[in-house]
Image 1 (cartoon, rainbow, N blue to C red):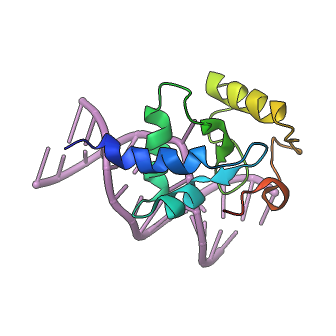
Image 2: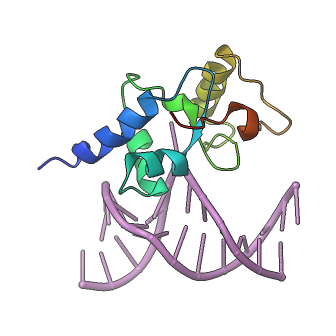
Length: 103
DNA sequence: ATGTTGACCGACT
DNA sequence: GAGTCGGCCAACA
């Protein structure tokens, strides 16, 4: 059996996040079902190709879950700004405004 | 099997 | 607001 099957559910959810919106790891995990936020994080970390909009997944604090200096962090921020998302002070994203409310 | 780590979360101080 | 702590559970050494 392939454990990547578990990841596929998560990726499917991420793929459903509309452009210009963001979702938290907990949210993704909840929609995927039978999944914890940590697993969502693992799924993103294991992601090598860009066939899913991984950059639209952030933590519950509305921040990018990468170290500041990380290359991935800069990339994620760039991609999000490209979609029209405005970062507040401290690199924060207003989840009330940009948060994905589901389908 | 055990111990550590992690793209997390919520409650608490 | 920031900092700490425990829980969570899969992946890894």
